[in-house]
Image (cartoon, rainbow, N blue to C red):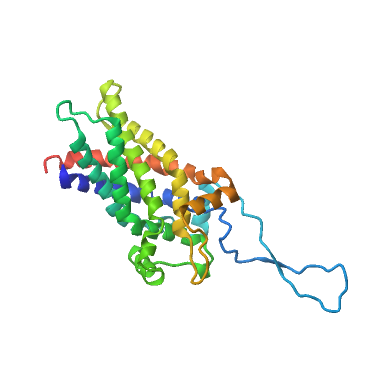
Length: 321
């Protein structure tokens, strides 16, 4: 299996990532809804009235923040992006997606197959669910650490259109994004939110790959369906749903930490993952951790289906290599 497992997983992941990129962008925009430190280009300015006349009037200006914008669904977010930024905006950051899948998913898919092969009982040819989950956790964590710079770049490029024009980063591509981050914020900024990325990737990989394998095996073992497209799609949808439910809270926090803009000499909006989680829950309620869940499941379903269907086809093509 060795190197072939990495190549097969990488090809399938890039195809799946590019085909579902607009859904991922919508998910990111929804996860950023409600952040109270997003700059407001048109603050309301009011001057207070005084009840008593005094010889010295104190000039004071009150900045009254506008009410938070109404939370909208994925279709409305998609239409708004299309109307205000153009159809090409739906593919903002796609170059980062390609790099991310090349680094992250190639690594996690390949390592998962390596671990599975090593931990499979040679006599029965079976591997327990616990070992599948462990293989997914380890493979996902390593893959995420490798791919974190591309992940940060992808989140920023996807979120850029929601900022005021004067504050947009306007990265030309993933290489430009990584270069600018390195120069302006230092090399460590490329691994901002890496603990969250690793945790999310461990959960996604373990739940996604282990669930797919387990359900596929159960379907074939019980003779519900043959080993074909129907089985692959059924197992893929189940794997996508489990992965979405398990990973969404971490994904919301990851998106916000990666996207935060730290001005020189200013305090960062979040000091870390826990601070971001607490501020989000206090300001927006516990269900804020499931913001973007509809586009998440809408993406995870098709992404997982495309991933595993493509993977099975690539395996057939490369079986003789």
